[in-house]
Length: 334
Image (cartoon, rainbow, N blue to C red; front, side, top):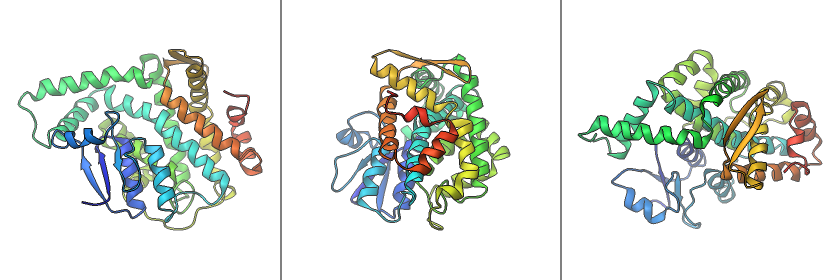
């Protein structure tokens, strides 16, 4: 038994985010697929019923993928996942939160919002839960899984009136990222950052699902290749400074992050602070409404603090200003 043990699922983007990170760090760990056979052990460590769950030698069990990456980075500094340019390091945190809290909505929509993807996803979930031995009542179990997951769609913001916004966001972001990765091995240069691990975790799930997977392979070959490489990434060169990345990185922020995620994240945080049950915001002149997500509010608050700590960094300030994103991080905001 190794000192690090990671409970996870192949169907969980956050599990793959952490597994890929541990692999990159060269940490010896046991991958424990959550199933009926491992449930008792999982419950002995878990505080919430979700994966990933990392058991570490010198820290308490952790189920927050963002915090896991931060703690592991502190304990194992090399190879680094923190860009040398402080502005890039903060932009990586913004993209990580975008992946975890916004792109995840798209992943849920693509997987559980349509046929045939949801049936295939339910079959994979069954195989995971029952260690590859499908139950006799296969159709009944599949239908139960589909119902349970479809009931969760509104909780992550996948409501019927939001679907067009999410689909447009997905195709635009994937296209912009593909252009950026055509010229860069990873998002911030020659080695991966937390942004790579978080985004690849979501995209790798969509590549598994038939409908989004076919679209990605046809339209975004560099994203597809990058996702495959992110399963066990290796540093290929140093990080790049922001100036060398700006030509294709700025359009990602200006064309997508500022248009969708930042308005929603800011409105969601305000709703959480005001103890509102629902969040309502205009995204590209269309109403986007959903249940207020309190974890996402806390996460975005942390990102705001990281940006504000660097408020005297001219490169970051200029980049956010050009992207139309600066106002979302002003001290007067939230």
